[in-house]
Structures are given as C-alpha cells and as structure tokens.
Length: 508
Ligand code: NG6
Ligand code: CA
Image (cartoon, protein in one colour):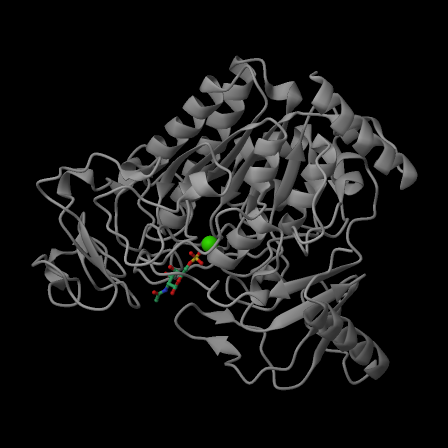
C-alpha cells in the first residue's frame, strides 16, 4: 500500500471507529461487479419464487450470497434509476431525467462524483458495458465523430454501450467515444423529430416487419423491427439483435480478463429483458414462455458467463457481485411478441402489485442479490435498501470520503449489505409518475390525478387522487388502503416526504 493510500485508509477507519462501527471491511478493495438487468420483475427468477421458469445461474449467486427481499430500484423506469444508481441523487430532484430519447445529451455532468469516479479515485479500473440510456454528447451529437461527453468523462475508463435502448435508434454500439464499425462513407444521421434518409418506417411499411409494434415503435426499420426514432446510414455498424447478449457479455468478460490483476469495477447493464425481445436462436423457444421467457434464459446465461469468468480467473472469492434490475416488469411494452399469451401462469411481479411505471411496489422492488464469498454470509435479508445506496456504501467499503455535496440521497447501508444487520434504510422515496415514501413497513403514495391504469401495458399505475397508505408488513400486495384509518400516519409520512423534497438531500 502506498503511504498516501495508507493515510486515507487509516483516516476512514478512524471515522468508522468514531461512528462506533469499526469493522474489518471498512478498508477492503474487492472487485465490484454490478449486473443490471432491464425490466426484470421481482417474480421473474426462480430464487424469488418463479416456478414456471428456471434461472440456475442467478439462483446460484443467491445461494452463495445474500438475497434481499426489500431492495429497490430508485425509480420505476430506466433512465432515472440509472441516474440515481450512478450519482446517488434522487432523479426526481433534477429535470430532464425521465426516459430519454436516443439523441439526448448526457445528463450526468462531467466532473461530478459518481459511483465510477469514486471507485476510480480508490484505484479501481472502471468499465461500463451494455445499456446506457443516460444520453451522450452535449446536444446535437454528430455520431460520426468523437463522442463527448461520454462515460469516460464521469469516471469510466472504458465503455462499450448500447447508447439508449434496443428499441431506440441509433441501433449501433459505441465504444470508447466512437460508433463501432462505422464506415465513414455511410455516415449516421439520427432524428427524433423528422424522418431522415429514405429507409422505410414501420408505420408506412408494416409488411416489412418481422415483429409488429403494439404501440409506438413504428419509425425506422432496422433488422425487420421498427424502432422509436429515425436513423439513416451506418449500415455496417448496425447491431444484429440476436447477437446483442453475446456481444456485450463478451465485452464484460474481456474487461474482467484485462483487469484481473488489479481491483476493478464493472457496470454490466444487460439489454435483456427489455423490448424488442430477440434472443439468440439457441434460446428461442426454450422457455416455453415465448420471447419474454427466452430473454430471461438469455439473461441467466449472461449472468452465468460472468460467474464462470470469475471462477476461471480465481476472482470469485474476492469479488462483490450485485445482481439486480433497473425497474419492475412489463409484459407488453410496445411489440406484439406474444409475451402475454404465453405467460402460462407465470407472475412477473410475484406477490407485488403493479409493474414497471407503477407507484405500487412492483415498479421498484426488484431482485437484489449480493455475493462476496470472502465476506458476505449466505442467507436472506429483509432490510430496506436501494440501489442508490451503492455509492455511499462502496465509498465506506473502499475507504473513500464523500464531499457533503456528493451523492445527496445515497445512504451507507454497508452493514445490511455485508454483515447480517437487519437495519438498512429507515426511509426511502420511490419514483413512478408520482412519489411514494416508505418508512419502516408503512408506505404512503402521494395523491395524483394521473391515470390509475395503463391499458397498453395492462399495468395499474398506483395513482389515486386520494392519499394511499399501506402496511407492507401485512399487505405486501397493497390491497388495503388504510389511509382513512391512520390519518396521523398519513400526515407523518407526507411531512417526511415534503421535508426530503425541500431539504434537497437526504444524506446528512
Ligand atoms: C416507453 C416505450 C417502451 C420502453 C420505455 C422505456 C413506447 C410505446 N413505449 O416509452 O417500449 O422503451 O419507454 O423503457 O414507446 S426503459 O426500461 O428504458 O425505461
Ligand atoms: Ca428498464
């Protein structure tokens, strides 16, 4: 250890001592891998109770580590969850952090402390692989040149990205500031306002489609699937949907191999199981549950590849691996892929109410497994934790001090993550169309005049013009609104939410 690192480490150990919780892991530098699945529900994997589908690789992590039953994504959609995971700030505090189009500018400001920059500071090699959906460039991006800002400007040494989502153009990968495989003679143009180029759209040429949209998704056709947004050019650079999982999993594996001899942080954000669901032929038809189930099998394979790589390189014992999802499940998210017809009794939300987009708990309560054989015992935990807490918790773990302006909503829940402390957070704000707050086992959903139900996705959105209060300890499915029975509780939780909003931070 260098002298500077030693001093830093000792200082943080003293802080921990002063806080009365000195523990051996306050100064560790395990490798850290976050596998961030997309739209995977609380009930979608067998270690969380699914019986119609088997996810042996995810289950293996759970059996070797700790499985959390009350862990949350910060929001019920992708962009705000990812923003919060990386910055430690509730996304609802900042305008422009909703689901982004594929040509959005990057919404995390270069220079601010992120999970990646903090770990880089701690001496880690840092890599982002997979779905990004946090914007790239500074607005009006020219996809044919060098892309700035990019993940490299917020703490990642390397990146290999799906710029937005699989259903949004441009349908190309970006690696370390450049579109991969771009032929300069066939430049890319992207627009979310007006058609560009002369390629067919799904709206005008549905006969060219191999999977039809059920809602939206009717603009430029790429690989027989129409997307959100218009693109032209970049033909040689376009991804093949069937190969996305293989490509990004391969990139994640090679990041681990390249960095095997130093501490590394890998943020591996899978495309599975987001739409369009186009798994590789080796998974097609394998689940008996249609494309959505096949995509779950493909996801499980990707997780297995990461696990096997860590085993092969002898790194598994000293790698803290988190497996989780960016938001809850949706069955029909805009394409006719027979996901609903083929569910066959499978319940993506498990015992929870709602789904992706919903203020009910299925929107944000997600699978969350922490495996670190060297330090984390096996078992189940019902501590309340959020992905937003990774930044503070891993800062403590690696001996990094956060400035007070950093990560304003990220709490140190390390004792719950690593030791079997039942105490996670005392309170948590959940973001859907409206905000909710959980305090202990109580959950309060703010009154909202938004729609209660979305018929396109068949999801109960959890909105109600009246306040809602649920006792999750008794009523995990949020069936009994007890707001009129406990008016004091409603007032108390509403006041807590108001204070968290007005204070501009919840980490003190
Ligand atoms: C919605 C899309 C949906 C999905 C979602 C974002 C339509 C009709 N629906 O607007 O398909 O892309 O945005 O998903 O366009 S997320 O997981 O990235 O948040
Ligand atoms: Ca998502």
